[in-house]
Length: 309
Image (cartoon, rainbow, N blue to C red; front, side, top):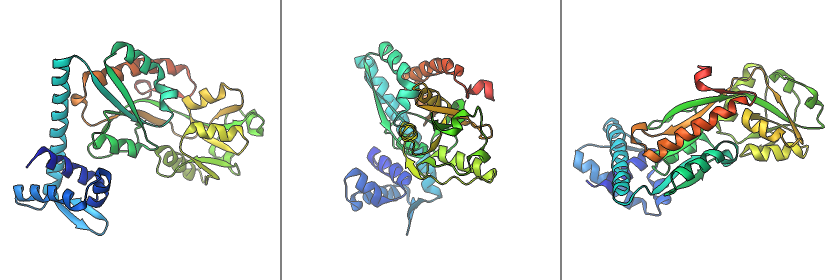
């Protein structure tokens, strides 16, 4: 049994498919399968079950998956700390989040962190859904994720830091721009511009609308809120966006943001594998961001988690 056997086994359980993992790693399926077979020989029991839809860990496999993930995290942390001990604080802090989150949330924190940690490179991995961010965390491809925290995934923990209300974004010339507040029932008949399927925000909005008997079917689908703002400016329809993005878009004067009164706020915050295994640099970035976040409370529709809970 080797560390590579454990890494491949954990990745296979997360992928749910040996063939998909093999393609991702640029290997043959048989070479990936050999790592799992070696572990099964070592433990004397089956660790995965193969089916038409891929693989599932057995009960024994789930035990190994969970504990191996913790062990691999600890080894990676030890590697980072030993490297810092020998060479000073260097390395890379990888954060996965939405494609435009840096612009709306993180730019000040990045500047402050870079000044405090000149030896640490910051790398951003854009992802178009919370679930994809969680996958990157579980595959050890990212240290932190800034995401909507409503979703859950085995092996990933979250910490909610704030809540954002929702606003209807309309062109300045839109008749709805004269309204000071709206309810979901007021959205019947709008030309709705919506996020891609599978995103947490879309799920939250569709669930809230369904409870009010409102059906939202996007005429145009986009992957990020910045694109939505452009489409709204062009007069292609209306979009529902969170508080911070709504505030920033409205500064241009080309669009208006009207609060939606009966849509529950969306929680957002940090995703990570194990808080105690985060590097000192990662924890410092979180602390810097949390400090910067306090200035955002002035934005309508924004609430810190401590004030909301």
